[in-house]
Length: 535
Image (cartoon, rainbow, N blue to C red; front, side, top):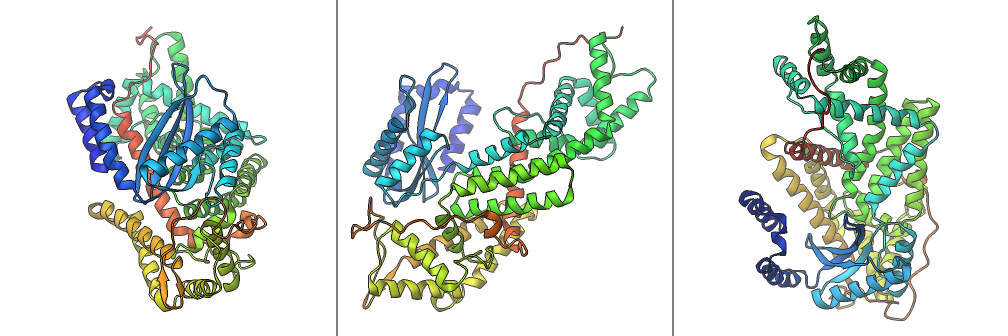
């Protein structure tokens, strides 16, 4: 799949094809043939159904469905024009049900989860579908939830001042990018002083993380910008403050901003506050994000913002940071908590380590009880023999004995690989990261599969496909547990469980920032309508 995508992109760019070539009948015939192969490749796989809506510039509203499959592929299922329909929960529910039945019948996949945005209609439609199929997980889109946390940060009392410094930074960036002469001076100073050649990044309106990226790069350029201004002032006659009166006034204002230490101090504060959310957004927007990654990310966010509150005790900062902590709790409260906690326990790198000892599942009996509840919900009730087999299997897993006696050493090995992947030698960076991710996923899937093997006396049978509706005996799944707060869930006194995820997320964010640089190479410059010349 990755090779196919890469080849299509290269062919399009190399041949200069107009993008409308994808509507060509011959191309559509090829896609139809390939689509049949894609369906065959997905047969029997578990999948997560995803949907989202948007309105195009032609004022048509579209609802797109795609699915991510357990073989780590993503497929577009269908795109529906809903321009002439009311956007109600009942209509969305019917579409969700129809698409779910379609992919299960025609693609042969097993839909185990469905996700979308957290609007009222979307949430109600997913809840109605879960009532029909209780084995389904129906989480919100967590990339969207991180965006809501950012929004809550800027809506906090007295956060407007920090936001104003962000707007000042955007104004400075726009001005710098419109002045090719100034950009040339920046490159000359970098080259003369042996500094790395860094461009001035600009923000993209549709991705808030690009604003963080732009601020982060501007802070790195501070010393260079100050040197450019100092050199210009030493000339006697400025090369930067030129043109008509409006252009001179603007240039003087931007120079004053570059020389303003309070501007840089507050921009650094803003960048420091946004960085944890940028890292979280980078994780939650992954194509194959897992529930354990989401919960660990929430735990990391909480501990990072708690730390920030102890470092900066001003009321302005306290209100904004507290707003993020409250938002984390708000989003977590809406989550199917038992499933997410269970997914962390089933990750052999973590198991029970991240959680506080006061949690009711922190005993052996409590942890097994939680896992058994999840099994009953997703599969079926346990027979008497099956219940005993499940207890023995889960006990072996949690205590690292029996078939799991070497699992702890293997998990530590995976952890070390992941840590090395965060800052690897350049020659092996890609290989190490891919190997670490693949090995850890394989071990997780193996544990989940093994926990699902129930031994009944002489026979050992693998679990069948999750059933739809109530379980095979007609009983409903166990009632949900009482919700628990993030601040009560995690062991923040020992956060070694967070180090691997932090390192991996930072590396992923740096790669995204590099992508912004690459895309920006072919971007149009900022318009400069001011006439350049000397009065």
